[in-house]
Every structure is written in structure tokens, then in C-alpha cells.
Length: 234
Ligand code: HEM
Image 1 (spheres, rainbow, N blue to C red):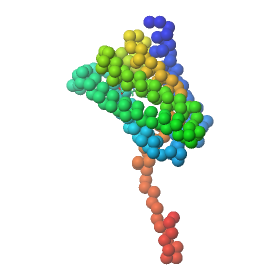
Image 2: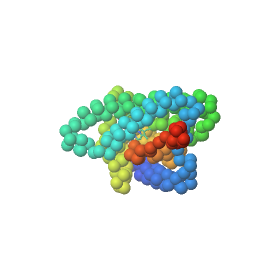
Image 3: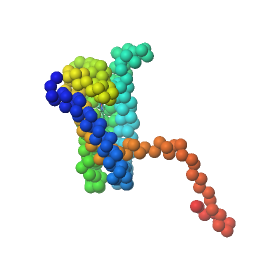
């Protein structure tokens, strides 16, 4: 293990986590009015609708897959009666399909922002950076899932990358798990660091503002107002 391994798998993950948390606190304290996804729906609706739906539904499943695949130790799924082969088959089909859906969505959003002049004119560098990073990270993820694992060699990421990630999150980072991980998997993670480092300073902060409480809020009652026999809308 050399110094680069220490930097990549011990130093950088903690720097990334610290910047991610403190960056959000800073952004919230200094830019509450800019805390949004800066909707561009008014400029173009059709491609936004398609791209956004595909991206968000796909990435939701990919995200849940990452949580289970990386944070749940293989022993737990085995104890639940799921063999390693069964797990990987389902992960590949579900992860691959949802990854492809999200990937098509991200490309549509990137092309829309680049090719439609009025959307491009109102976009900042960080808007392009976010979409480009998503495309790069997902290209590598899909290459690993649908090409490397299938045509080169099935890679046991749960006992290597998963074990490393759990060691980082429990504050006992162990870089030795990452040493023999293929380069395309390592690059996938390093580009994810870049995304997480940029996250608090981009439109991605809107993810924390999804209006879930809206579903539980009390009804707002609109009543007609009667003015001398005529009903006027309040
Ligand atoms: C430190 C963070 C991350 C780690 C450790 C990680 C790890 C992995 C691993 C191990 C795979 C499975 C490869 C295989 O099946 O052999 C994968 C696939 C994938 N990742 Fe990530 N990933 C991270 C962040 C991200 C992010 C931020 C995105 C979204 C932009 C992403 C998108 C994908 C996609 C689309 C796939 C392929 C489909 C799938 O298997 O779900 N990953 N990633």
C-alpha cells in the first residue's frame, strides 16, 4: 500500500464528507433564496419532462441499490436466504435497467441544456458540471455492471468496495480493501467524490427540499365569498 492509496481511500473520503456537510451549512446560511433547482421549465417543457422523469426514477432505484449493495454486508443477505449468485443476478438486472433509464435521462438533460439556446443562455458553469459529472459517473458504473462483470470477470464489490465504504463510515477507514479493485471501479468512486464535493454549491441542493411534508399538511380550504348574491372567488 502506498501514499496514493492512503490519500484516495482515507484522506479524500473524509475531506469529501466534511466539505459536503459544512458546504451545505454554509450555503444554507448565505444563500437561502438561491436554494433551489432553478427551474427552467418556463423555457422548455417537453424534453425537461422526459429527461427529468427518466433520470429521477432511474437514479432513485440506483441509489437504493447502492445502499443495499454497499452498506449491507453479504452475510446479512445470506442469512435471509439470498445466495451471492442470486443477489448479483438481481442486482445486475435491476441495477443495470434502472441505471440505463437514469443514464438516458441524464443525457437528455445535458443535451437539452447544451443545444436549446435559451436554456443554455440561462445556465451557469455549475449546471453543466453537474450533468457532465453524472454522465461520467454513470458511464463508469454501467461499464462496470454491464460490461466488466459480464464479459471480463464478475467482481465481488460487496466484500471489497462495500467493506471499505463501511470502514470509512464507521470512522475506521481501511484502504487495504481497495488495493486490488479494478481501475474502472476506482475511477467511478473518485468521480463520485468530485460530485459530492461540488454538490453543496450547485442546484443539487434541491434534493433536500423535496416537499414530502406537503403530503401530510392540512388541507387548505377555498370558499366562495358571497357579495350581494354574487359568488366571487376568494
Ligand atoms: C462513493 C460513492 C459510490 C460508490 C462506492 C459506488 C459503487 C458502485 C458499485 C460497486 C457499482 C456496481 C458495479 C457492479 O455491478 O459491478 C456501481 C454501479 C453504478 N453506480 Fe455507483 N458508486 C458510487 C456513487 C455513484 C453515484 C454518485 C452515482 C450516480 C451518479 C452512481 C451511479 C451508478 C450507476 C448508474 C451504476 C450502474 C448501475 C448499478 O449497478 O446500479 N454511483 N457503483
